[in-house]
Length: 294
Ligand code: DGL
Image 1 (cartoon, helix red, strand yellow):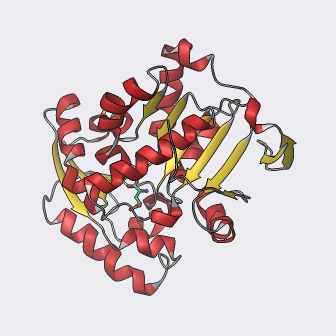
Image 2: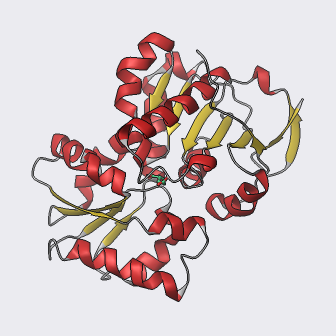
Image 3: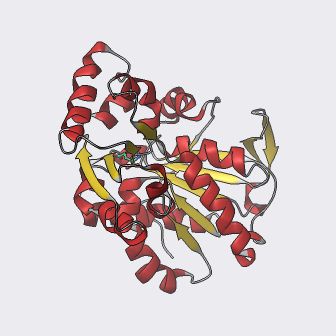
């Protein structure tokens, strides 16, 4: 019997081995901003969250490393019975998702599904822009993958995409320094560098799941007529749509409304920081993911 957090935020006990939850993954805390929206939109399902905090940030790491780390974590979710895993991390979605879907899933278990956050965003983002000039703020890894440029082109060929890497933002957020005067310099710097690329950008996407936590600061340094979009709601809507179109996956999911949280690093640190991202207090458990075999 294990401790879990129910939809009302209270702790209760349940037998985790009987659950087939939706898995939600991030390199650290950022995915909690997406999970928060998903559980609001789809409250009936059971969820487990894994933050690979011991190896975060993923943003500056190579394709090979992000792929290897992400695959280990996906295998960990599968070993815990998840039929469906959402990579609530742009860097992992950009650098690992396609290879996992195309090469690993058919070998590991063709019945399992792994989804990312880039496609649900790119298939609707063009609808938000009148000028058809869209700005992307993301980690260096997401920008260098060019995933947003390639994917938006498929759905909205008339849209021009401008990208800016913000390598200082995740460390500022993870160290809870994002709301300080010291952070202002780097917030202004990246926004100005993005807007310098085109004077008619009218929509900016926060294409890193950490960034919504400093939405107010980003808003402060962005002209008021520019829309700032976060991904949480877009991903939640897209997941709801996916489940309605895939009853063969949906019917495998248990409906207990429980939320379990795991981290590869210190649970004390995770619990202290995570509430800020999730909007409710969290009690996590530690796991090692490096020895996953499937
Ligand atoms: N939250 C991750 C994303 O959406 C980035 C954090 C990191 O660099 O690990 O890209």
